[in-house]
Image (tube, rainbow, N blue to C red):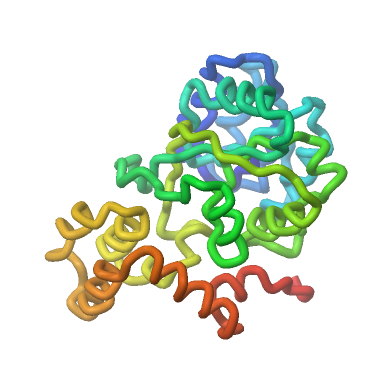
Length: 284
């Protein structure tokens, strides 16, 4: 876990890992120069549980750099990702570990997730392709793998590639595409094991312009994209009038057409979200 100024959600996140049904793990955490109560919370938890080891940066270094450091420090055969504002279900680690041991050809696995909002409100179950081949085919255009659910053989990180530290956003998206070319085996556990907090100011929300048009429009579009259109319609009276036509267009566009449009946009538009996020910025 890498954490920066997340005291509003950190305690629940930490507890969700410490309360796992599988208990034999080390919990490595990097505090990326937090200015809020995060350092105090981390110290209290470290004093309480010897499995926790906290590191701290004097100045912020960013998520990919912190993850790379923690991966190198890790001693286990498997590395599970966790974010400081999310919740792992009690059986998450046990389920993913069992899945990996039963499927020796799989090197990286993820899980299905619920989407929750800043205040913990449940929004919907996140939609993703049931067929792993479809998810991998779409990977250059849409990343359906939820990064903090990643459960990875440590050797994959060390032998096939760590995170590219130039990617402060979409570092996982870039990494998955890179290691996929090395025949690394991907899969998704077909079970909800995680509550994924989608905040308006998060990296994931920034993939879409919907986050800049208010909470209700954002929620409505997220519901549509995740195949919960009827729930989305309940918000129509709260959507800004200037966004109604765009909302209605999104509501009636089939998922397959949306996918086709994203692919075409990515192939021919250098400023598409995928191309912008995955374009390495050597100046960073």
